[in-house]
Length: 273
Image (tube, rainbow, N blue to C red; front, top):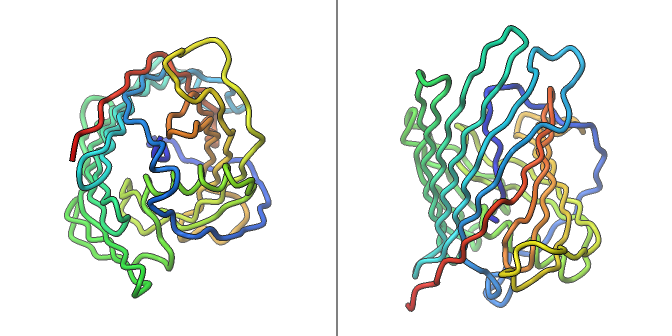
């Protein structure tokens, strides 16, 4: 999956982890993109840990993640609802939609995010970004919630190509990968994402339609541009298969952790271009 982003009104700080960073070359057309399987995946979220003293008693939710290819790029649509159960008996909902398009050469990106909290307040983020690798220059142009241009760090990559780069690194035996990634989910420039790739494992039993049963557990730490410390803003563990399908995730927040289980998987036919 093009790297899953966590949207929540709860402040996010993940576990402290010290990482040694290394770089990876930009993904080529002869890479993991060749094995990519367009798909629609349905997930269920459940709480695995609540921090002592938190006002949150439980969190649950559902997510639909669609990643498909069109003739000029990759399209991602991510929808989910999260329910927060509080110690005072309240339950609040957060409903999020993220839609994006990314060019096949990885140079251009368009994004739209809509978030509705507690059924009342609605917020939007919308814009486009480009990164010209020959010039080593990039910019993100936000149209909503306000007009704003932000410079992108050197070697910024967009989400689909980031996932392909992680798979390429895993295939070649590389264990630690880091790079700035821009997804447009917030009114800010690219985050620095440092990933630790675990040993290849095999998915047993379920989802017989998966062409590739093997997967790599990838632990990703996200650092915003303002974060100068060694503690990431949040962390995600992703079980990623060679064709881009994620069979499971763990989301680590400051106040709780979520397990994200794959419930159903639908393959999408690629267009003839």
